[in-house]
Structures are given as structure tokens and as C-alpha cells.
Length: 126
Image (spheres, helix red, strand yellow):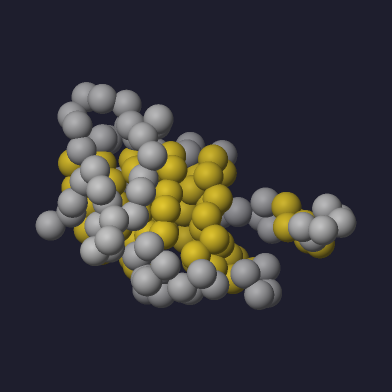
């Protein structure tokens, strides 16, 4: 992953992720961490945004595709090959819950939108 200055576009540093094929990247303002979602290795690399150092790896139950944060301590990521959505705690770096979406359908083109109560508008995890 390349970290660069937004104004000058000058490269600040490169961070080696702990997985293969980082497909999506998310900054979580609640934890001040950056999450890469690595498709081929079914995990997420967690990077401290202040130090640009890897602080952990989160194993996921399948291929992550797209993610969103609620800004209050929950990150949601769809697992496209399993038709699931996972809820991640960005402080403990653990998958707290996961739930089935539509069996047998590819979820890669779905958009995850945080709802007003910290859930997804299209899926609730109980």
C-alpha cells in the first residue's frame, strides 16, 4: 500500500500488507486505523494511520470486497464469495458477527450504506 501526500501526491512511504490482493482500503476515523481488505488471502491488514505501521491482521470467512465504517466503532465488509456481511470491531480487531445475505448471489456490486442505528440499510446482523 502506498501512502502519499494528498496535496503534492508525493509518496511518503510504502506499507507491506499481510495479505494478497488488497482490493479495498478503508480509513476508520473512530480507531484512526486503515484497513486493507485482501481478496486472495481472505483477510484484512490493519495499519495505524499515524505511524503507518501494520498493527494486526483480521482473518475473514471468505473474499472481502467492499467495506464501510459507521464511525462509532463498527466496520462492515461484504464477503462476496460467501454472500455474507461481517461486522468488525476496529479496536479489538475481531469479527464480532457475520450474517448471510442472498445465498448463491455475487455481492461484489452491492453498496454498503450505514443506517441510522449502526446497522446496514440492506442487511441486519442479529
